Amino acid sequence: MLKLAREQILLGQSVATKSEAIALLAGKLTEAGLVEAGYVDGMLAREAQHATYLGSGIAIPHGTTDTRHLVKSTGVMVAQFPQGIEWDEGQIAYVAIGIAAKSDEHLGILRQLTHVLGDEQAAAQLKEATDADTIINILTGATAAKEAQYLTLADFPADDRDQLLLGAAARAKSAGWGDATMVTSLLASDPAYLGEGIWLARAQAAQTGWVLATPSNALTAGDLPVSAMLLLCAADSSHLPQLENLAKLAAAGQLATLAGSDGLAMLQAGPASGLAETFTIINPHGLHARPGAMLVKVAKEFESDIRVANLDGSGEAVSAKSLMKVIGLGVKCGHRLAFRAEGVDAEAALKGIGEAIAAGLGEGAH
Image (cartoon, rainbow, N blue to C red; front, side, top):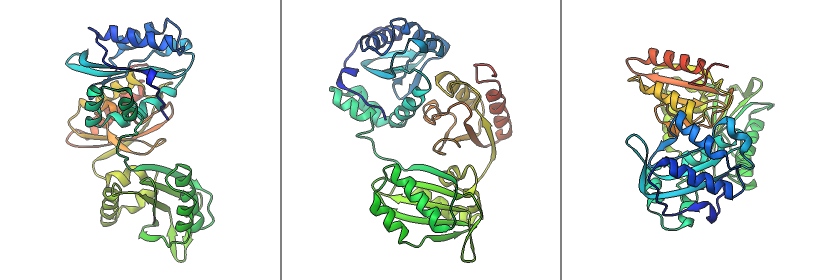
């Protein structure tokens, strides 16, 4: 979880260029004891490789892998530029978040930041904020509307349906979505059979989210198969789109796909359409700004709608043409990305994306 203190927020800054903005952030990171003085060179080198502008008036300058040895401790500095800075051609940044990370820790920071900053309203509030607390609350999600969360519990060693439900409930509780009372109420409930081996359990909770649990061995409940247990923790109405998708999957005879490796993506996207492929990321440091931008660039070359989900992450399907959304997936080396393309050039799009990933997304194949 990203933690910020008031001394990490630089309000009302005014500089002429992004190089000056980066130097300002690097200086503050150095003063805070997070990096050695030479880290600024790595930040400028990263920017030369590819601009770190995310969109919505937000930039995230950070160092290269070659300068990680200069990082003493992972942390950030946030500078607000109310008048705006041209970060890349035609792209104006109003907030720049300087990141220092010792390893792949920055992916977790980026994931949290992009989740918050994907909200255009939040980005406007960051630009106009006049106090540090407002910026802290926005960046840490304290003022952001909570969206449905997604968790998986794959190959759980359950002996029966109730144990599978218990495992899903425990997973939700450990994530902070509910307490022991929620678990007790779930165990006293009777899950609904949706068909094709898929079961649904529901409970009131503090956070809306879905847990998809699959057993390690074939199970039955009476004469009915148990291929997967969907646990819905409901705090508000943000789960309704997924319930609609469940109905569509049932109508299309595709409920069984929920028990597959991209089950959460199916829950969010609904019945499968278009073409799909899964590729493994080989970049040693995952999809940070540079390879992430390359992936988005390749996706934008095609007319088709392209969605991508991190099968080793939340499973959430997002637009492959949004750098903010792609970086927000928190992709590390070895993670599997499931792409689905729908349109006139869908086949060519998946082929091009696969080739780009195999080539290292601008960092060379390893």
